[in-house]
Length: 102
Image (tube, rainbow, N blue to C red; front, side, top):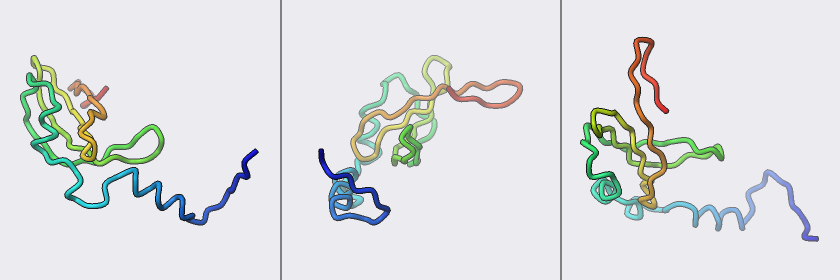
């Protein structure tokens, strides 16, 4: 059985694996136009910006956020700024009690 190390100290192996998880320079991130290539062509974009979104693993991802409409339904689409992969799509629902996403 392998020896388990439990510590709050930063180990060399942690640093090397962290560097492989995300780009180290801005040039390594994909641009807005490249991110748009992964969107549904029917999405009528109303706004776009960089956003940080949470993950289910309690980390965060830098994404391009595109707000738009398809067939009169409002959406928020998040494209990973590092990989270009679609991370999330939220439907925006306006109600008398406020705005919801799901």
